[in-house]
Length: 448
Image (tube, rainbow, N blue to C red; front, side):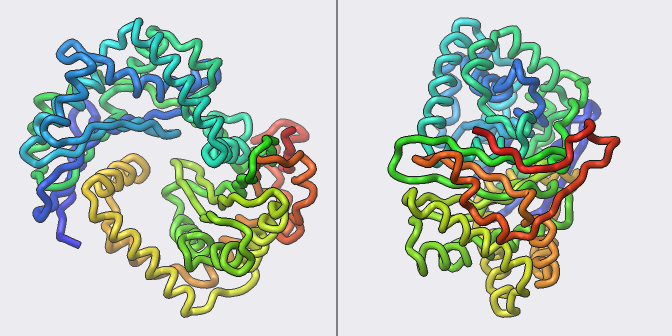
């Protein structure tokens, strides 16, 4: 990896600028990150963060929608945006000489979009079609179901796009009010990585970026340890069963993040992973199987996805549970642990060859930790993970009463009862009386 230099400046209005100078590159990735996403929304405005992200491309006082689309593309650059559960990001990748144009455009759409009422009406239909598309795509819908199974009834478990009902109620006034409340300087991080200097980025930010001051901190959703996970089956007449199985975990700042990264790679991080070798190579039950994870400010999740013939669903699920149990009961060998760490570190370094990936890493570290973690520090943390730590993590997380399940396929709700949940250790987590209503102790919910 090339040597880089990370710098940070906090502006008087609270806006943060973090940059990483990479002298060997000829491009820059830059993003305006707003610290708000779908988990901040009330049920009646679910999907507003995502809707607003769509609408900023519809025009500003300076540029119409076509001019926004062409402004960077004709320079060979790329403009895009995304909404997550906790953040909204407007980002671009350009040649270093075109950084001023990228900053000017990103600021224009993020701060000055006019949100035309006629476009809001059209975009409602577009987003509703997007929601239908995900719902009709089993391997995507099952992941939305899974997040809802981890945190049923909470905003953090709700689909980022909201529902057709909530989107259909969204008006220009809703979007404008939401932007006014959350798109404020103290909630914004500008992250940039590549062929740049920190001083040049600061100069461009001062010239072009003008978010209003103020803004309140929204109340976050209840911690996942205070609710019951669910097990859901969406019965459909299709040829395969799509399954997500997993558990709620910990937030980004929790040190257990590193053992979880190693466990994720060990169980389902590639062709050499235990699940791929056991469920696909040895038994031939699936084509695709992998593990996945995500971290939020105060929570996270670990999961496994696979698709198989309906008749093999229970058998494949039991094999996944066995591998989770094995990690909790049998120490990993020194050789396998070294191989998994090497693979994880290699994948991370290869991923960071991209300026876009470096920019994303900068922003997430600032938003979640308030500081940048050097790659070398991350490598040391991964190297320090022991077999004992992996067992402790598995014993704590991979227990019966924490398991969430989502299934899409031609199976009924009796599937849940046919899975051998006893392969994992039973554990009933009781919620302190001060944090729950009477009678709300953790138990598995089955949603029919």
